[in-house]
Length: 502
Image (cartoon, rainbow, N blue to C red; front, side):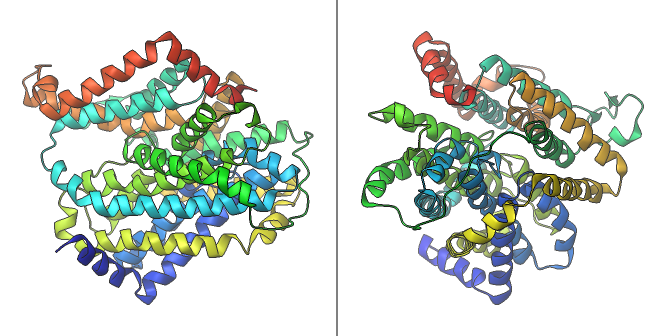
């Protein structure tokens, strides 16, 4: 069956009334949690995961996927209107988006964010449809050594593209990998770093860790700065950008689509790093970089397009390799397993309706998100004008419920609180928590494939260069390291992310 036949089959699955309804629910919930600071797709999907037991496989996966890419839309709303990024991938949007809002151009910023997200998400979904089967066939030739090199390369990319100090990023990734070793060693059955606590026998759950590092830590930071001015937004005059705005935006949208589509596929990439990389690229190619940080519409168009494109293409390694690129994808792996489906190279053959139905639902979901977001801007503004003293207890309650519901254990809530304090400390030290979370998710997979490759090769490290796929990836990794070490490129990287330090 050709590509168009597969897409037609997928659309037949996606337009079924139940699947359409749950696609809408996922898109709406994703928008809402993107708007609410401190409540992310990870916590929401964790809350809804038990509800998927009684749902059909297609409906449950389509809903959870809609929550993920819907959150990328919603996060831009608060970032532009109130300088509060609802999602970490929307942090960059605050730099120019909120300045546009202060200038009375919030409508143009919100419209460009929606249009760019629709275009980036649609093109990235086409990439997923076109290259998903090709990657599936390629995945059948992957072995443990190849997976190890691929994951290592993804972690390196996250270090190179993360804003801030390279040394701090390396430290955060290493800390995440170390946290991922806590629990029972699956090969030897030995307890590692549990300190006698049986609750740690299965390791630290990434949901309370993520909610603590991002949600609770952000609340603590906001409470510390609750007297600070978050800016006054003028009334919205028009939702549509001017002709000059469109002229400046469309090249940024095209570049953001390319950056997001590429980084979403890589393990360790994802929407957050794609938005940072896109903003950096726009500053480099701009004729007048001094406009950025003062209301440059390219600073909204590029990152918002990139984060939504990356949200779509992050499904490529999940569906074709069974490899999650971030914490949300790792949670989706659990959702697949609950439904009795193993994501990976055999999924296209064993579950073609689910594979193509999920891809086709993304086009429908992106259209739904535009319809949802533009008319509801006034509602989100009213919701977010609630005083933060009243808002943050509700956010904390949602996070606590999400952590407790995983294992019905108060220990997970304590873990969330502990990592909230750690996340707040990292903010004060200028360390970015995103590489830590990526290291935590990918670290166990890195260790597992390293040990498996060494066992198969009887301890020979040459296995990593004897495999053509692994050798190619390691060469690319070496080239990236050399480029990073060049003084000129290192200076450019520091300048590119200077706005995060200011």
